[in-house]
Image (tube, rainbow, N blue to C red; front, side, top):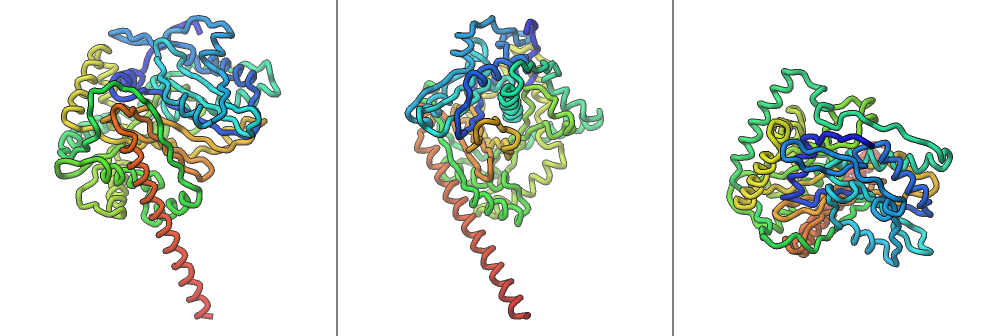
Length: 464
């Protein structure tokens, strides 16, 4: 690539988030059975950079309008070392969780790093894609991983294949083009109302809030078995809730049980929204690697003391959000800050907002759900898929977030954090509480369903 690319408003917002809230790199992890052809994988990574030109750039933090400029030409050795390499290890998981927290600087580092983790004689291997969040969100990462794996598979039969560069817009215009002027004005009005609702909150989470260095980075992972996931989905359907809302309710309750809460009134919790939902399906496959995520905030009242009460409040509010441009309500604010103002001004405002958030303890935990990953979309061709999951950024407490992915009915939750900012025991306690409550919920629902089926069977027999 030989030309500059503009940085989008969300690229810039996430750049400010990287300075204040998190590491802003995300991961796609595929566990496979069999042997990946590393030379073919390396070629697929190289071709993917031709298909998605932004991958071959680096961030230039211009004070007025930042942009992406082409990376310097690399030798084959440099490419293998920096972009795509093999990690040989006696412990696959240890190597994986050592690589995940490694920071990625969008100014000096590759914007994508692929690692093949393997052990001599071991039947399984791990393919990890680390992506700079400034150029893509969870939806973008999944789309890129799908493209990379398809390139890998295609090169097995077409070694000379060359993809076409995707030079479509990476910006919010992909979303705003879907709405009329009247709808855009309503989104602005709803955003103002959402900001007032946010600013009226007086109940706070007391996440650890220390000026210590952002060090000792690590991840914790929690897996929910297919049988438990099926029971939780069934429970959700019975209560008019998606699996995401059931998990969000458990997440919120676990945090409230572990983290001190101050003040009175409602307490907010956030969930991410993939804004690609507003783009017609036939256009989504042609969208480039980009950031197109929003958030929705739910406010849980103090009267919600049980799980059913918490979930009921979330279900009711989510119905309202879906009728009011779900996930879009902060888009006008992002556009105003990072398109309407010079970048240095947006940076200053973001830094002040973060400092105010730390002082007033107004951070809000986030659950970011990438949804269900379909195995047929990620077939390498010469190996068998065992598991796929995503891992979000390392968060800097008092910010706190957890990623969720589902693959073959197994749900994986991951949280990244700095042990210098929040104790590992605190994060473990949150996951342990979630695990226990979800296990109890699934068991109670299965018992209730079994009893209900038994009663119906007896009624049928008695009628006979």
